[in-house]
Image (cartoon, rainbow, N blue to C red; front, top):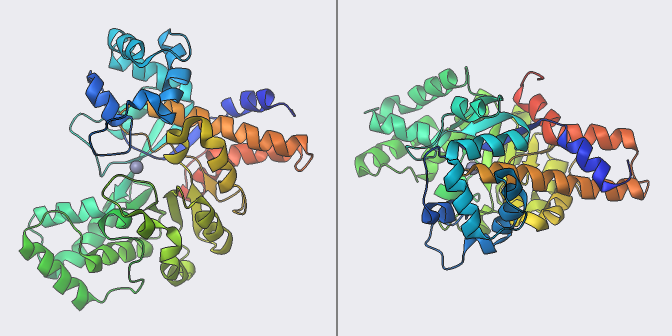
Length: 376
Ligand SMILES: [Zn+2]
């Protein structure tokens, strides 16, 4: 099994757990919408998405599944996509991605996005919800919750959501930055901050004290906390999304044992690897970055495996809207793993049994263990 081809075959038989993704859009979409969904940017672009790393990967990897040659041009790809219809395209791409389990962040989306069950239905897989903390708090604010009742109500709602959901997600990186005060806010501090927020009439939660209160409630809940790190749209300030900026928070939460899942991490993959190496409750993935980097994903996946234990690195696509992002995310990730593990095997740095075991852990086993999912 020293050839990358044999490794790719082995990796493609492992059904993956995508531990962070969103739904797909089931309705027909026009070329402009496709272009905007094929970039992480929220701004109108001057560049054609088909001429980006992910666009090239879509034309290479997805085109054959639509009956087209590899590397077909973007217009022909969209033509075939429209002819087959979005549901048939989704069925083909999701089946080929070989993802058996989706952990779906339901806190962000549009009206036409699938529910977790609908998403899983396309490929006969299973799906579980990840609760976005900020969305839950904003829902409480809209429902007329008072400042004095907020803290207890939030904790109650979180607990009931976690009866079926398997983890939570924080977008502290978007709403403030990862250089937040690590201290647990007191109840009077939370009350006064919530009061100010509710009085402002601003639906979007950006108050750092309230944001911290949500995080600490999640720490107490004890289920995995996914945190957006690094690469995102124009709403983030990238240098404040370096995960080492929350080192004090990680120190303060070691004893809780609550797993902290660092998502995406680009370009701070090495920083995230360092944190996963040192802190027993820290895990990382390279989702989003691996998919959007297409043919360059090997370099990113390689960095994620430099110093972090192989039992603490997970797979995700962070796909949103386009089924192409699931297929590309899964394919380039498996290809990157095959190249890295293939090199190690060729150098006799690891044995075949370890290569197989790590492949299973990196694609599925680590996520099943940390989120408490049953084997499939
Ligand atoms: Zn996401």
